Length: 93
Image 1 (cartoon, one colour):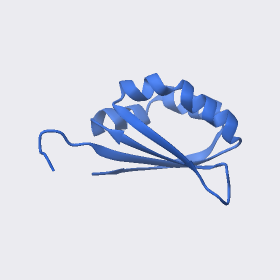
Image 2 (image 1 turned 120 degrees about the vertical axis):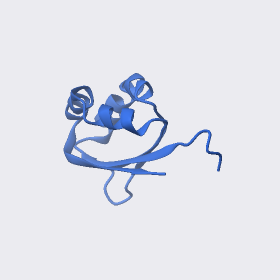
Image 3 (image 1 turned 90 degrees about the horizontal axis):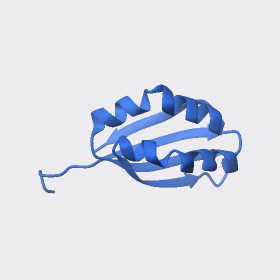
Image 4 (image 1 turned 135 degrees about the vertical axis):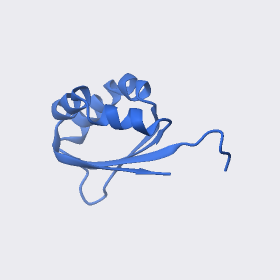
């Protein structure tokens, strides 16, 4: 692996009230993710519970992504989209 460019992986898992409503909010938040260096999002839903969401994303700058994750803009967007409880967030390299 090249040392010149490393990309972190970010996984977020959470429950939502309604997947359709959540997906609309997720899609509307694309510019915010891109500004935080969070790209290439892939969304999966559990076969057992369609409102159990797993998101896999690439991160170019972990510190910037962590700031974004802790910010009020994302928290308000998640609340508006119907996220239930606190998400599980993990970084991996």
